[in-house]
Length: 222
Image 1 (cartoon, rainbow, N blue to C red):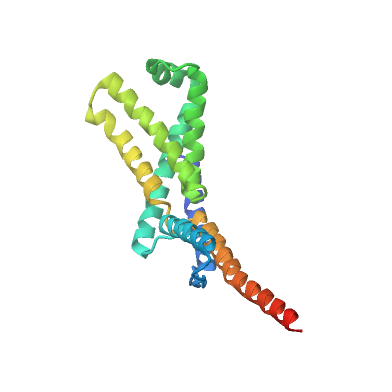
Image 2 (image 1 turned 60 degrees about the vertical axis):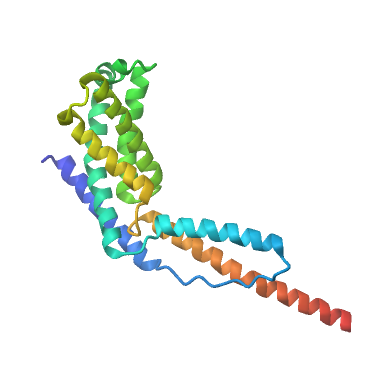
């Protein structure tokens, strides 16, 4: 095991612990219900859309269950720590990778796509490890692994010994893209803070509106 590998694994676990610390500081708060009058159809529709978006963000980034979130953290660290080295190998000799892997796919500008693949795997891996913009990181790895699977099928057929590693990386990154990074991530802390701020502003808005109406009625009475 090289020193670079040890440093990358240590950095991955260190950032994961930072994500846990951020989660502890940003625990989800209860969502306060905002009263909406029956006659206000437009505010009711806006509130319904906002509630749907809020529910989608919570189900994707703020998943319940300690074991489920721990499993997503382990999956992110495992895929990210291992995929980094594939990107480093590509960038170590991009011309060789372009000749052996990109040219058989008949893609234009093979050297350019070799660099794109290398940087996508490195940056995507770090985004997964950190849990920061993790959907973009999972999408980058899913894209590169999809192209890799197509290349292996095109050149070697359905050879399980050639496809197994690519399919494992593809399945793991696609699962993270669909399910989300879990609570133990920077994304969860950011989304939790944004939802808390929106809930606070939503609960304060009706109070301001009612106060202005009461002030107007008092002014007319005087």
